[in-house]
Each structure stands twice: as C-alpha cells, then as structure tokens.
Length: 285
Image (cartoon, rainbow, N blue to C red; front, side):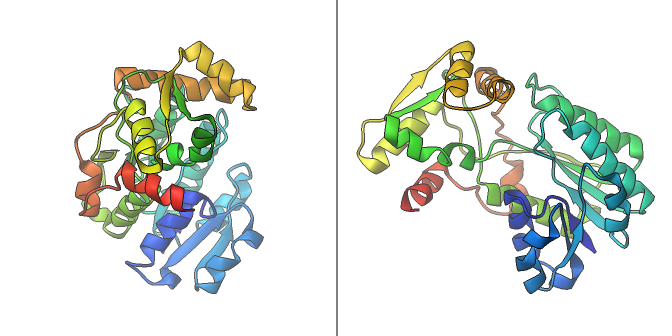
C-alpha cells in the first residue's frame, strides 16, 4: 500500500493521479485532514484515512498496513518541523518500509528561510533509520502563473530576484517524479534528488514571455528585498510570510533556485514543462 499525506492539496492530488497510471486504486491511501473533502478519491476506489499533522494520535492508525509513504511537506511555516517529526515517528511505529519526502532545492546549502525546516526534517528522517528518498523540489511554474492576472492588471512582473536565473517546472512534473520513486522505491533508497526544470530564465524573461503571448507591454520591475517585502504586505500578505517570500526571491541572485542537472527530466523520462506552455495554459483559463 502507498500512502500520500496532504492528499487533498494541489501536489497530493497530482501525485495520486500519476500513481493511478502505475498501480491500482486499491493500492493507494489518501491521507487527509478532512476526509469529508475527499469524496472524489473514494469514488475512484482509493482508501481515505484521516491524518492530521497536528493530531499525532491520528497518524499511527492512519499508517497501519502502509508499505510506502510520501510525506508532502506541510504549509504552516514555523510549525512544519514539529509536524513532520510526528509523521516520521508514526511511520516508524507503524513499520512503514519506505519514506519519500518533498524537501526544497539545495536544502543542505540553501540560505533561504524556507530551507530551515526542511533541513531539520531531512535530519529527522536520517536519524529515524527509515529507508528513504529525499525529493528536493525546486519552484513550481505555477508559483508564477498563478499570479498572471495581477501581472496583466498592473502590466508588470515585480520581484527582488534581479537577473538571477531560476529553473522551475510544473507541479505535475514533480508529482510524476514522486510517483516514479514510490512505485520503484528499491531503485531510489538513500538518494537525494535535486529536482528542477530543464529551462533557465530570469524574471525579466518571464515578463517578456507574457508580453509576447498577450501583445501587452509587460515590464519587469526590480525591487530591493526590503521594498518587495513592503509591497507584499501592502497587497495583503502577513508581514512574516511576505518576508519569507521576499527572502526566497532575493536569493535567486545567488542561484538558490537554479539547478541544471536535469535530474527531474531524467526521472520522469521526458522534458519538463516549459514556462511558455504554463503561461499559455494559464492565459487560456
């Protein structure tokens, strides 16, 4: 049995869709905080179990009979290390035989605020002794295209990444890699994969591509980290979260989100999704 934490999330749903191409529904367990929101999984013959990162008592029972587990990192920044530890402890108690974890690109050397809880989690997995694979995911194309309406409204891509290059891929690309690892786990035990897209570009390149596809005049507006943080707060983000996002953006200048090993495309056996294609898809919605 293969279980996926956070299965109701955007990545979790895509991982399950990819698993269904490789194994039968009765071999998949969707671990979710709110089972009542997972009726679509049940309709496909997928078993749904309640598993709340903040309720440790739900985790061991949820993992009974699970052979392979994908721990999708939580979204509550500042709480994730504790939450992930609870899942790791439960996996060990439930005798899970393989664990894959969605970490962050270059976590071991990254200066990003976002990397800190991933570092702690990776160490916790190592300390647990569980056979494991670390999937260090880079940025998603959707991190950009999800805000395309605002770009078109303001005629600008705003960021603090300067001329730093990034190599994101589509969320589905990362989901497919996770499915490959889960269904062929013996080939991947002990591996740490730096996963990113095949295509490198700058934020200015991104702005130019939107301009090309829409015929609009779209500029790249480069801000300092401080000014970008202030702008994000101004548009409604909590100050702490805004600071985290601006920190990640600014570190693009140092290559924190740039990786050209093409490990992701090698894992999935095809090129990763181009940002041009993700922009086209977003514009068509």
